[in-house]
Image (cartoon, rainbow, N blue to C red):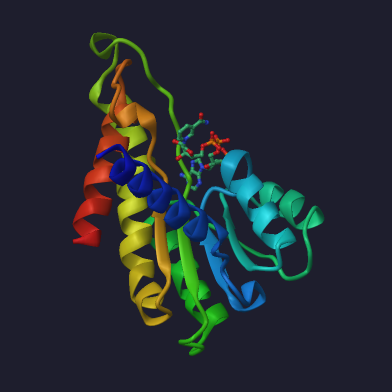
Length: 194
Ligand SMILES: NC(=O)c1ccc[n+]([C@@H]2O[C@H](COP(=O)([O-])OP(=O)(O)OC[C@H]3O[C@@H](n4cnc5c(N)ncnc54)[C@H](OP(=O)(O)O)[C@@H]3O)[C@@H](O)[C@H]2O)c1
């Protein structure tokens, strides 16, 4: 019995090791479209993937953020201005992504919907509808609209979608739209996957 258990644990560790050793090949042929690249995780991810040779399509909220990012990266990295709360901005940015990737269906396109805000937040009874709506607009509707607009290209390129949620969707320890929005991102991603 113990021997079987030990063998099972050994096998599980071996499989994990093999999985972790897997690397994506031909990174220089892969595109990744990331939202919210002015600062924080999005900015860091854009710079790291650029350093690894990927073709990063970085969406920034401001021209200043885009300029600063371009100054720290290679010429491969391209930027576009995107406000995820504005449909016309999303339509223009996703059209730009399609043009960048073109018909190279074997080239992979990844999408990372990272843009997000966390304030206003506080005890719910201190907040009004607009306080909730402003966060949900960026973190939930923004994620949904960018994903829905980009998914046809991602599907064509046999790519991947990474919607950035948060542990706060499990531990809704403060009021406001943030935790609710991240729960919504989880549910939306599940429905998309199914
Ligand atoms: N930080 C954490 O501990 C943590 C933990 C779990 C999950 N997350 C999630 O990770 C993501 C990034 O968080 P972060 O900490 O890196 O935050 P951050 O530094 O504030 O970065 C968020 C980015 O989104 C941009 N943004 C804000 N409103 C936008 C809009 N309407 N349209 C497009 N872009 C917009 C911001 O631009 P500006 O800089 O120009 O405002 C910024 O570049 C978020 O989805 C967040 O919820 C963060």
